[in-house]
Image (cartoon, rainbow over the protein chains, first blue to last red):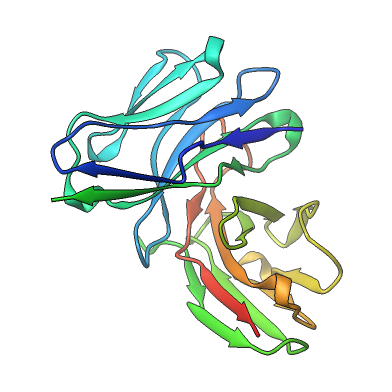
Length: 114
Length: 116
């Protein structure tokens, strides 16, 4: 069965430190990959997406993610975290053979220490 | 441009009661999706409308859930009768094009449903 794994439920980093949130997926072919963020009281906001081409994709708010086919991973990174980045982050996958829907990971809650 | 809106933001009901959630997609978006997140779990797909037609309802948990999208604009999701396990956050999303090769699903803030 298809699945998306975010192994870290919570992560705490200091403001200004670098960040990496992990995401692994299990699909036969290369799916379309997304990272969303949800701040308190807000909807899910798309940070970035990967469809094809350059495996390092840039998103909004200074985030980037790298697709690694050999590891079935799509990890999200940011070189310097700001206090406003505290939120919950979701990795999601779309694979056409599984229908026109997104399959999400369980989410990672990011806390930022000042 | 207004985003996806959902009403109410919170709902607390007792087991056996009925609740109706509403979603207003972005104007002009033919595709509307419902998702649900049960506490601590992943967000799961419920169903997909294309205009007023149900394209895929494979994620609907059981026949206590009824989704409608009359006129192809806003959508409602009714739970009748509600059970404890229906508690969670219900998200709505919309997109302009049916496939994701050129499009993105835009999400609303969600409705938090608590069944006591």
